[in-house]
Length: 168
Figure 1: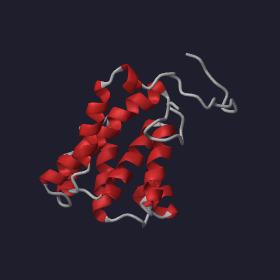
Figure 2: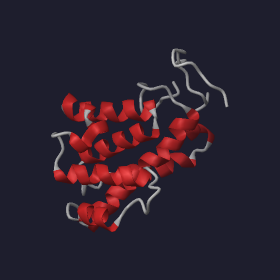
Figure 3: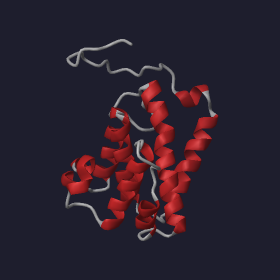
C-alpha cells in the first residue's frame, strides 16, 4: 500500500480522465431515475441533502462533501447547520425528522460489530417521522449517494467543479 505524506498537495485533476457516463452511457439513465425518485417531494430536499452530505463525510469523499455543501448553501441553509452535520448528535440545529434521517444514514453506512445496523428501534424512530413512501424515498436517497460514492472514490472527480461536468 502506498502511503502519502499529509502535506502532499493533491492534484486538481480527476483520477479517471474520461467521464464514466461517456464510457458507460447507461449510467445516465440510472442517475436520472435516482434523481427522479428522490425528488418526489415526500422528503424535503434539504433533508435529502443533509443525509447525502453526511454520507459523503462518512465515505471520506471530498467531492461529495463539497457538492452537497454547495447544494445546501444554494438552498439557503445556514452555515451553522451545514458545518454541524458532522456532529449532528449534539447540534441544536436539526429537527427530530432530520435527526432520524441522519441516524438512519449513519446506521446504514457504518458497520456495527454488535448487531444489525438498522435496529427495530431506529426503524420505529424513523417511521414515526416518515410514512412508508417517504421512508422509501429516504432509502433511495441513501442508495443514490452510495451509487455516486463509488464513482467519486474510484474516479475521483475534482471537488468544486460542476456537478454536471466534474471531468471538465
